[in-house]
Length: 293
View 1 (tube, rainbow, N blue to C red):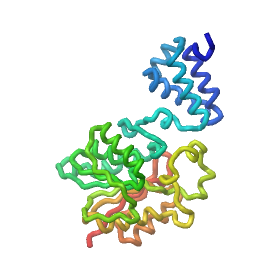
View 2 (view 1 turned 45 degrees about the vertical axis):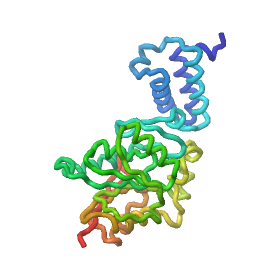
View 3 (view 1 turned 90 degrees about the vertical axis):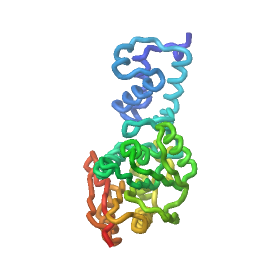
View 4 (view 1 turned 60 degrees about the vertical axis):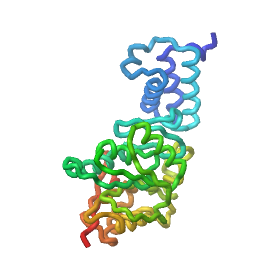
């Protein structure tokens, strides 16, 4: 039988490490292997260590080698598998949406902490997630703040379809809106507005990994060098018109633009502006309030 149709699990692990080491490094290559066999074979790390000598063949091995071939091209694992996890919930992902990042989980946690009192008292907050992508922020908030009414907006019709599928997958009711926040208007009031908009300037592209540049949607990533706060300003203006008195505005931000964000929000009369670092010590999140008029 051909070698590629018969292989021990431990040898497949070595093949993943060897093939992906130059792209991701050996430690991440091993982590990717573990995630792959969990998805394809249903083996977690402990089961792998017990089954390292198991011989794979036929359809299973074909599928695993197919995953490896796509990974070698630089395609992110989440897109290859078509799924990921965020804040403890499952999500479908495609190249139409960004892959949810761990630092965005920290933003979600901050929103939940800030809304805990309202949830405890049964007050149903009105929340909108702007630039929802996969829907990971809106869905996580609805899951953990079930009394709240969630809306989610994105300019991409394809992203909205992915987000709707993820809301269905997690059995949650969310109002999805396909529109551009730079022109969108609403008569509805919101108690919380949260957004992780495009914030990477074009000049920062050279510092990014090719697997992001070649596969993730540029529409959700980049802004012009001369207008790095374009979406933040549009969302802040929208928030000033639609936030309830003392309503909260949350942003995930470009780590290099914390000072500029504070100045912009202050100029637009937001108060209690707080800049928070992420797990890597980078300025990554901002929370502020709409002042009483």
